[in-house]
Length: 231
Image 1 (cartoon, rainbow, N blue to C red):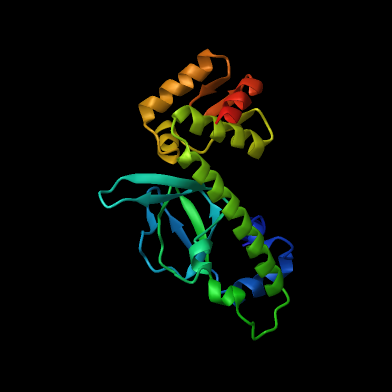
Image 2: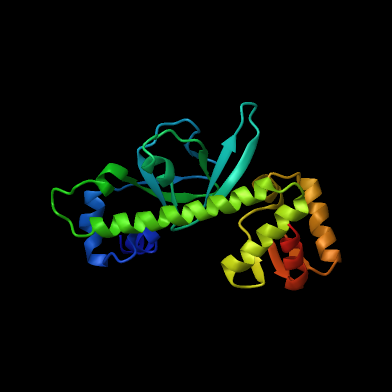
């Protein structure tokens, strides 16, 4: 249980919550736990959802499918991340996406109404949880704006340069590992895999970057930023 509590406290939703408060808090918000294996579906597009998910371990994929089954990965989430909070908070409760486990994962679900409702026990931590949730939703909006920036660009070079610059900012480092394999990155950027590979090879030949699988090192940030600003 101590290990689970440490994982829970690493989640931004529980920032400022004390370790000794967790037992009462988790009971109050009706926390429940589930384990998933690789490719297990957590919930499908158009399912009715009333709970917020918190990743305790592993990774999950958020994907959108069209009417003929074409899939686009919207994001890959990792330990401590939340999911489903945006559309649960909206009150619509119908999932616009399919959520699946990328590998083995542990998920904690909490009842949204219990999270924001008036507590019969007058728990002091509800106000803090609501404040944390507002911050998380604001940050999610920024991430979705970033995603829209990729989708509005016409060329793969434009999309890729924006993505790589954002990774530099996120990691505060010129070397980083992204959470996608090549075909997954192509799906995320809404691009053709072969064309993406050609662009990566071209950028490497130009001395802008080097890469191996999903690990990148930006050799010339000046040239990369020039591509970014030209977009």
